[in-house]
Structure formats: C-alpha cells, structure tokens
Image (cartoon, rainbow, N blue to C red; front, side):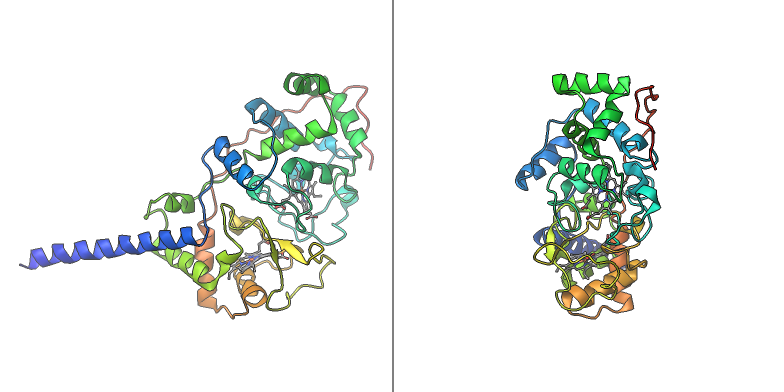
Length: 343
Ligand code: HEC
Ligand code: HEC
C-alpha cells in the first residue's frame, strides 16, 4: 500500500513538474522568445523576416572576413582591429565603459562597445539604429576617426597591397576584387557565424531539464515583470525601443547620447550578458543586478527588490552560450607598397 502510494505520488509530482516547465515554455513562446537558428539557412529566414538584405554565404568568404576582422592594418595606426573593441574572447566586447580607439581616445559620446556575438540577428545596428545590415555597419568603424580612422580609399589601398588578400578577393568577388564594399561584406559574412547557442535554446526546443528550477523561476520572473516586452525575439533584444519610459536613467549625464531622432535606443541583446559588463549605452553600470533594477525604474516604473533581481540574474546567466571555435588567423606579410602606419 505504502509503495503504491509513493509511486503514485511521485508520478503526480513528476508530471506536475513537467507541466510547469511546459507551461513556462508556452509562456516564453507567447512572450516572443525564440531559439537561435541552427545554421546559415536559419539565419537567412530571420533576416528575410526582418527585411534585412544579405549576400550569399560561403565558408571561404567567412574565412576571408575573419582575417579582416583581426586585421589591425585596417586601422590608420596599424594597431586596432575589430577585435580590439569586440574581443571574441571577452563576450565580443571590450570590458570598458567607453570604447577606446585611434590615438587612445575614448569615444567622444562615451559610447560602450556592444557585443558582436549574435549581432546579425539584431533588427538594427548601433545604439541609435543607424545601420540595418552588418555590412553597412562595418564601414562605420573603419572610417570613424575615434575608432580606426582609415578613409575608405586608404583601407582599399592597404588591403590591395597584400597579394594574398588580392587573390582571395578576386577568387570570391571576381573582377570587382578589393573594394570597400567587398571588405565590409566579407567581415559581415564572418560575423554571421558568431552565434552562441545556450541551454536556454535547448529549453525552448523542448528540453525541460536544460534549465535548472531556479533558472526557470528567473525566466518566469523575467516574463512576469514585463522585461520581454522589449527584450524578445531570438536575441532577447535587438530592436529600437523607447528609453526612460518611466523614470530617468541614473547615469544619463555620462556622455551626450540621446538615442535616435525619436529618442529611441537599440535594445541590447541579453545573450551572453554576464560577460559584457559594463552595461548601458555609456557603460554607466557595472553590476548586472543593478542593471536589472535600473530597468525596473527606468522602463517599467516598478521597484525590483534584491531577491527578484537575483532571480532574473540567475536566468540571464543561463544565456551565456557556447562560442564558436575560432583559430587565430595568420595575416599576410606587408609589401613595400603597403602604406605605413600613421599615429
Ligand atoms: C574603437 C573601438 C571599436 C572598433 C575598433 C570597432 N568597433 Fe564596433 N562598435 C564600437 C562602438 C562604441 C559601437 C557603438 C557605436 C554607436 O552605436 O554609435 C560599435 C558598434 C558595433 C556593432 C553594432 C552592434 C549592435 O548591437 O548595435 C557591430 C556589429 C560592430 N560594432 C562591429 C564592428 C566591426 C566589424 C569592426 C571592425 C571593422 C568594429 N566594430 C570596430 C566600438 C568599436
Ligand atoms: C520598454 C523596453 C524595455 C523594457 C521593458 C526592459 N528593457 Fe532592458 N533595455 C532596454 C533598452 C532600450 C536598453 C538600452 C538602454 C541604454 O543603454 O540606453 C536596455 C538595457 C538593458 C540591459 C543592459 C544591457 C547592455 O548590454 O548594456 C539589461 C541587463 C536589461 N536591459 C535587462 C532588462 C530586464 C531584466 C528587464 C525587466 C526587468 C528589462 N530590461 C526591461 C529596453 C527595455
């Protein structure tokens, strides 16, 4: 009799548990949370849905783009590559409040470097959303004075002076060869591969054990508090949203960023968020708990207590994903024609 009862109750208990996870899964889907695509075809489905242009993917092009991503000669000084500020070993960011670029100068608007991981799935790029495609985006920092400070013409001259690049561009792009557009396209193609699937994606795919009980409770808290109203989709962010909806941001005076012409700000992805402190457009907040609480007061008009913030944080930490293995590229040797670095 005892045995039967124990068996019965453990069945009831187990099904109650899985029912909760199943309910939570339904709730997460209804809140618009989606798993990362499994391959490049899946990436293209999302880009098409968002109306974002892209070029044909090939491994060869991504490999060329990887070299250019790590290529410091794309900067005027010969010292700064994309990886300087978007370090692939550091969550795709730099770990400092305001990005530091050419001549060691901090970003004039005190802007923080967002992560490049999963950035292809944002519906818009930059804090003010001024670029839609990664290719358009990539041209910005190469030319920007506070970043790499290399005018397009000089960038093309530098890359063309390296025969190995010349050959690779001709092979991939045909007659057009090394152009500024093709440089940006190759880098963007590499960035498409920077996807970081996490246990959360497994949970969304129906594996109820992929998240611990505490992480599931945190996910529920995240949805119930209203975070997913803006942090949704595959990136739990990536679209333009109003900022300071309910209250002033504590560090609003740091730098002079005011959002786009309507005061909207690109909602950062929350994937790998535990790795990308400091937070917000100006890197004003170092602690993830504090960032969560700040969202309560600025965006939701609620006060989030320590316990609630910790619970949400527990969930957010489960968004730390597996990074693709990246072999550090060997870069072509300079020739006599290669323009010299200038500081
Ligand atoms: C000096 C540091 C620095 C360098 C070098 C740099 N970036 Fe950035 N990157 C930033 C900052 C700061 C922003 C945000 C700027 C803004 O919104 O105006 C940014 C934004 C981005 C974004 C948009 C992400 C998002 O979520 O909005 C991508 C993608 C990106 N950079 C890729 C690159 C690539 C590719 C290169 C190399 C060609 C590069 N960056 C070079 C600092 C840098
Ligand atoms: C109304 C839309 C909206 C809501 C609701 C919202 N956020 Fe945000 N979130 C944003 C925007 C926009 C930013 C960027 C603000 C900035 O830096 O200027 C942001 C930034 C963040 C950041 C910093 C990310 C980074 O990389 O710098 C975290 C963490 C965050 N939100 C978590 C949350 C949590 C947790 C909740 C729920 C308690 C929440 N957000 C609710 C729109 C929203």
